[in-house]
Image (cartoon, rainbow, N blue to C red; front, side, top):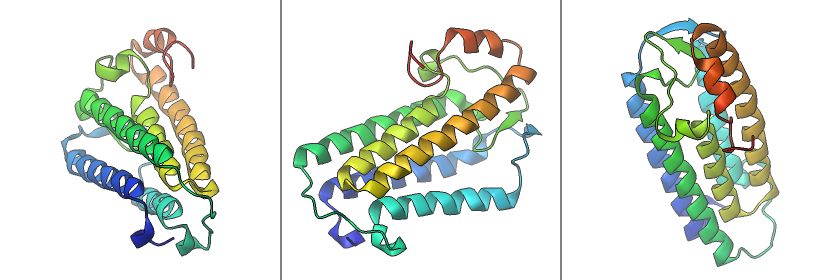
Amino acid sequence: MTVASLSPYSWITLMIWIGCLAWLAAGARTANQNVHVSGQGSVLLRIFKILSLVFLFVVIYCPQWVHLRRPAAHRSPVTGLVGVLLCFAGISLLILARRALGRNWSDLVVLKSDHEVVQRGPYRCVRHPLYVGGILGFLGSALTVDTPAAYTVVAVCFVGLFVKSRKEEALLSQQLPGYASYKRRVKAFIPFVL
């Protein structure tokens, strides 16, 4: 499978991701200054994160570039459509969460100047809607290509974001008054469940 041989559903999810990532990159300049960085502030780490993200998209959309094979199974149009809708829903949630965070947003585990406990928008329902949106976006993309490697990307992203969420929560619980009570009231990833 090459980029040219992607299904229309896969192309749609790829374009959704490109638009989202461009929007996030453009908005990164509006965030407040970092005042406390949890061991993750190096330029090398940011470069590593960007390269890792590129690699994940290669695994999903162009697995042959990293010597992974595409199964010969036929992709169902229904599965493709569900994948597009799930990707769109996930990226929409991610964007709503990013907008709700405003100047508190960062791709690193940091405390911002004038940091606040955000409880508006999707943060009323879950503590990590950015991560939930990203995972749903990747799951939708995986459904459109339907490869074991793509589903592995979803699992790896979930584990990575789960670990990152624990680091964030430890920092915010120590540094922000009110975060502990917010954490007791609102579930991390799935409303009323997890």
